[in-house]
Amino acid sequence: MAARFDASAMNKVIGYRLRRAQSYIFQQFDERFARLKLRPAEYSVLELIADNPGCQQGTMAKALGIKRANFVGLIQGLDARGLTARDQQPGDKRANALYLTPAGQAMIVEAREIQAEFERHCVELLGGEAERDHLLTLLDRLAPTAD
Image (cartoon, rainbow, N blue to C red; front, side):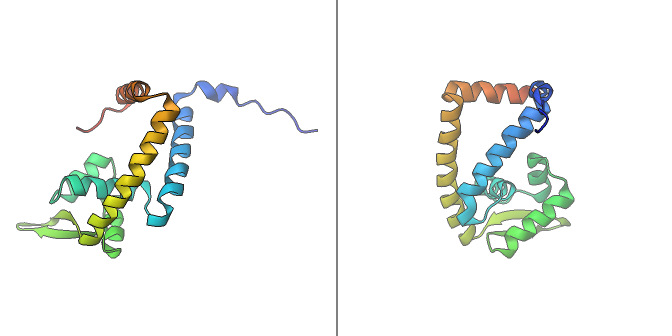
């Protein structure tokens, strides 16, 4: 007979509950975005470049909370897939402006449709837009957004 396992002490630990929610969200994201072969970080980069063409890599990495060195590998992967392009800025060989290629622009159109459906699903699970807004307010107390 298996011994009873009690994990109830963790249910009141904010970090644990956030991690469990993140795991669920990422699993659902992976299933929905599988045909596009996009990971959450890659989607975020494409979305932000689409909204901010010409932004610099350092600015993007900071907005996403990614170390600059790690961001370089991320953007290199998107470049290799033909989704993004970098334009070296005059006077600073380390500063690159980021752009979507035509393939990247087509990809973000599809990705935004998938994300909109996924967002509707998440809002439904939360009980509506007011509950979503409340959750976002609470999350901002823990980690303010980089607006």
